[in-house]
Image (cartoon, rainbow, N blue to C red; front, top):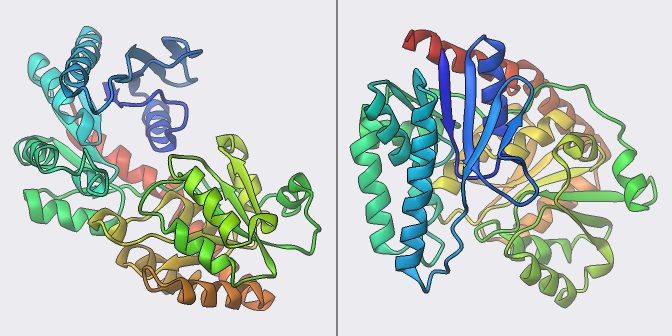
Length: 383
């Protein structure tokens, strides 16, 4: 079966799409991913078992030039659609709502089915952004989902909470394919501290992921100011980095905070294994954050380190039954500091919760367990 996957990124850091493409290719499907161009990247890239075609551009016009931005978007969408049609796929796989309209256009031109892969509740995930959260944009995105999601031959999503919401909104029965990494043995636990020049006995609290609105970054910094025995190591970058650096300085924790920037994907697991505590603090404002099963949660569990998280249905629903972490109410820096202190000060608790998380990763939260569900979707399509 020939599968055309559509994404609106340059495919340099999309672990989920890469995993799905490789799994389907290994199952003898012909997978071609249509993505965006980026300086220094080839327009056609052999990714091993599948091919990436970078056929359109990121939009460059600012939000103050909406007409120009809309024009760029239309040019981009036409280019992706034309290139996808040209390979005559048997199925079009749409990753997130921002590719759904393009994918449906391709599928209808060719008379083939399309799959909707909801990495998140897309409109809900944008509500904290000034332009994307505005009423016209939200109305457009939600209208597109109402019109197009029910027509998908299959709907895939990443957590049980998102699955319930998609069913309630659109009457579909999503297949849960969680965004878990492939199972690997624990790596050298000294690598992170050695690379950062920290003493082996030092304690590291890890923040992993984009530095973005909604990630409770201010509260995390405030909490770390109350945990004097630990370093905060930040793996990631984003628009909130400057504000985070300012708050770190204001709270007097700059000597105990290390910004590593974007860590190469192939080194992420190794370096995660060297932390003592992983964090997943969110503000819980958006429904998407409330229900999310974040990539880093599964990374921490597989690495065998305990997680300090916000008490939201998504994270709590995985961590607490597994015994893999502690949770604090959203927005409560004092409670966040309290659970961090409990983990930092108690090596036996850390070891117990880390082992529980690792056991859950080995039994369920790994890509081999999730992959079977993805392959079943395509077996049922049978085109």
